[in-house]
Length: 354
Image (tube, rainbow, N blue to C red; front, top):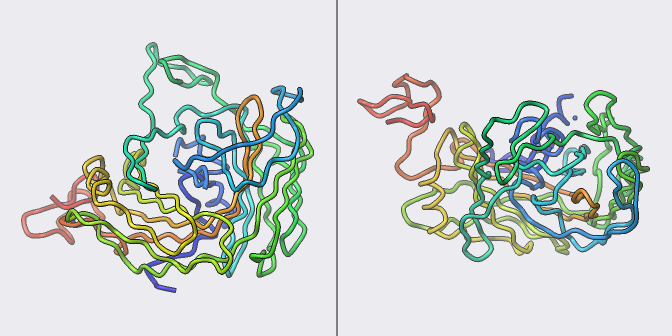
């Protein structure tokens, strides 16, 4: 594998989110609303949209609906997302984690602000409440304070189709679901069917199912953003494509992490990011070293009156540091220092020289 590209079993996507290895997968799926961070995925997260399925009668807790989700490859949209359960697969490891909230977190409902073909720019919403919301409330759309969504137990979670049996109970304090045991390699194959069932608690029992996938191999070694040119991302397509590939570009990983570009395409081996969108992304925010995330994903989801819960099976490769460059921009590490900057320039607060 190219040294600039890392296959992540321990760091999640802008929509993804267990101790050490799983802490990263839960940085979005398990803990994204805690930090108001990416995903949701899955995330993908962050800004990716998808469908949901299956409604029915009354349930427990939030009067949710049980049943079996439709295996249509659709993840939840951020407008309806209550939580993800993520099976993060690579050729060397497989990790599992997730969480579910009582409601949709307003700050995580990304807004599409520009689109060209399969690619779009998404931004976090600008929410303003006057008077300011006081914990445990949070600001919602329309300047309204609402009760902050909280993580909830959905009973015992059982995942089938992996190389070992997986059964998880929610952490008594955090309500996160972590599987801390090692899953023998390969954790799954492209022929696997990953089944998910929750015994029910705050939401009633439900089931989901998604196809297994091949570990993702990205062949693009580096990209340069800018110069009014498109950027092409390439990977080895699956022998039998069953899902989609998400490509996410973030130029503000040190800043507010509030803007990202995302392309969602079939698993055909490449995607060209339009120059016009790249220019807009550069104009919106640059802060810290850029990050390119490529995700092969299958999914399933179920809708309940409070929103949507999904299962994501993902293989993720992250390129960062020198693998992603912005034309005309020099990055630095120490604010106020001239180290690494051209003569006469110093490191600015956004970790670029100027």
